[in-house]
Amino acid sequence: MKWKLPDFVRPRVLRERGVLGINARNHRFIQEHNPRHLYPRVDDKLFTKRLAMEAGVTIPPLYGTVEFHHQIRGFHDRMDAHDAFVVKPARGAGGNGVLVIAGRTGGDYLKTNGKPVTRAHLERHLANILSGLHSLGGHLDHVIVEHRVRSAPPLDALSFQGVPDVRVLVFQGYPVMAMLRLSTSLSDGRANLHQGAIGVGLDIATGRAIHATCHNRILTEHPDTGMPFDDIVLPDWPQLLLLAARCYELTGLGYLGVDLVIDAEKGPLVLELNARPGLSIQIACGHGLRPRLQAVEGEAKGIFPKPAEARVTFATDAFAADSP
Amino acid sequence: MTTRTPRCSGAEGKPRNFFLWQRGGVSLLDLSGGEGSQVRFSVLHESRPVGELARERADAADSALINFSIYELPIEEQNVFKRLMLVPFGALVIVFLRNVIGVTTSGTFMPILIALAFQETRLLPGIVLFVAIVGSGLAIRALLSHLNLLVVARVSAVVIVVIGLMALLSLVSYRLDLPVGMKVTFFPMIIIAWTIERLSILWEEEGARPALLRGGGSLLVAVIAYLCMNIGWVRHATYTFPELLLVVLAATLLLGTYSGYRLTELRRFLPFAPPASP
Image (cartoon, rainbow over all chains, first blue to last red; front, side, top):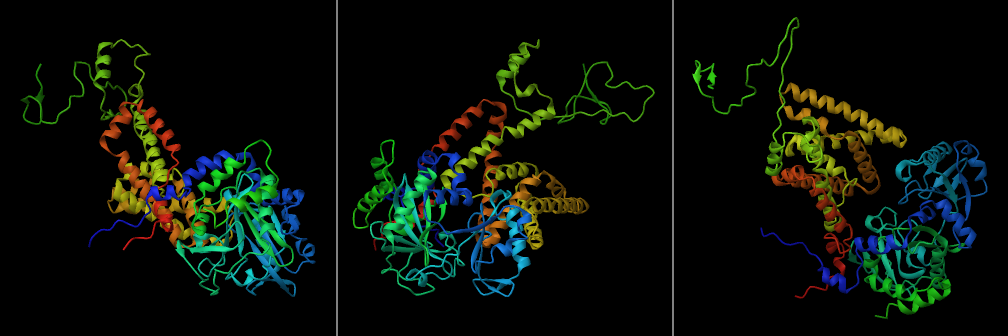
């Protein structure tokens, strides 16, 4: 048998197409534009939520927090008013420790898949979060209880399970690239691309799907739901971009990943922020990040950032899919 | 002066491979009124730069400033440094493998510690022991996860059980006359316990494949670091010329500013390749 060199791209091709590598991202963009002392603003979701509320950036409404073990006892009474809610650790990573309560049955709760969750189980889950079971490094943590997001048409038909979310990469306040993330049966309802979720690249100018990939393969329709990707156009697109752009003022982080959802009741909401957003968005969009980041660096000179509206306008003009 | 060999009926001369410990009329040990005394000799094989040797001979008179080398230390400390001086080189190998090749490892410097343990156990037995410890640790960790323990308690439990396993392994291999098994104590236990913890979290969250890839990647890096640290001239040079540390430091700083593509990214970004011409 003849040994064959595995398939690979020549580095020259990647350079010509402006693809950003991990080393360049860390060295050139994250270290330069994301000062370390600002990280707690995104790593602690409770902190993020407070900042967002002050700035008037819409987020899933906060129903309450649990900070100490003795508060667990009164939890059921406090949540009486809400049929559905989401429980998550403030410092969790990668969706760990998130429990979605979709309804109630008698005194107990129901999960999204219809399985019951007893009161005792929920209490144990809260205690685990407080003790840091789901947070990085096992630090003591707080519990966030918030509104359960339900996606509105047409997006609700797209995802296998879970809510489709939009990842916008915001550089110095300018939205530079965006993708829609759809969970699949392969990704087990999660929206992380390396776990098998689908990344649908979106045109920054219009919010229209341009390109879809899953595990590096190009797709034309959802493998579980059979929905074609060509005619996806995100509703409320300008509003989504504006929300994403405003997260720059919120955090001060120059290189930022903003995760947004469109809720059936509340409209576009900022779900989460990320100080080290991944590079797969380039594969989903079929476009390298480097030229866009450089265009922003050329534009964003001066001490005071331009207003968010102006930044969005610049981005939709400069980064439209039909422009080079 | 002549030497006589008692074993060969007092023949004159030295047997082959013979080392003279002491000569002179004074006895090595005088003992009166005591019993069970022992005389022991420690030997260390070492290579030394000629220049240094010459200087040492020249001024048997001690001038503290000139004789400022690791060779001045007691033999035990010298042995420690012999190992220690290899760590920077191992670290350089790891920086290269992670930043330029793009291998994912569990814990940044865990592979160096494993590679140092391999120095004691030799390579193949070391790999077998490592896989045995981590494998059984993962199994125990899977059992423990049913108990909903808190992080520190969980890792401590893994440490305790794995140390028990190591003791068992040592005993069994001693009985079976396999000296290799006893060297299991050279593995850094706490680091391995955290590795087990991280791998099992990865296993639970993302499945067996990424966990095995990460674990295998760590082992691969450890093996490569071991092989590099075991090259004869590397061992010789790092110990004999400690100033080479500065060269290693410079190379590490240079690699730290490398912002080109990693080798693994050339595969990751395959969709950007131009369509193959038929």
